Length: 101
Image 1 (cartoon, rainbow, N blue to C red):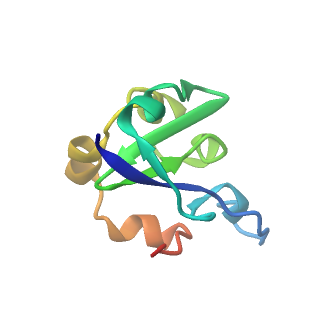
Image 2 (spheres, rainbow, N blue to C red):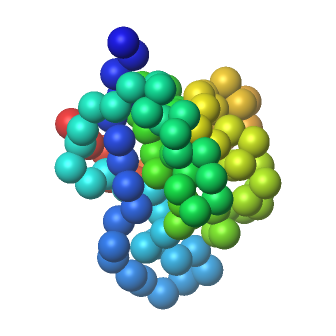
C-alpha cells in the first residue's frame, strides 16, 4: 500500500491576518494509506495529499487565500499536481508548517 505521513494543525496562537493555529503543521508523524485519506473528505474533516505527505486542512480552509472551495475539490485526494501548479512547496513552510522527520 501507499503510505503517507499525517500532519495536523498546530495549536499555537499568534496575532496576524492568518491565524497560525489553523495552519497545517505536524503532530506526531504516523503512516496512513491513500484509502484512509479518502475517508476524510468533508468540510468538518478534510485531509489532502501533497507529495508524500498528508495534511489535515480542516481548520485551515477558512484561512486559505483561494477559499474553502479550492481545497474541497481535493478533499480526501491527492492534490499534488494542482498544488504544484499554483504554489511553491515552500508556501507550506511560510504558513507555519514545521517539517516532520
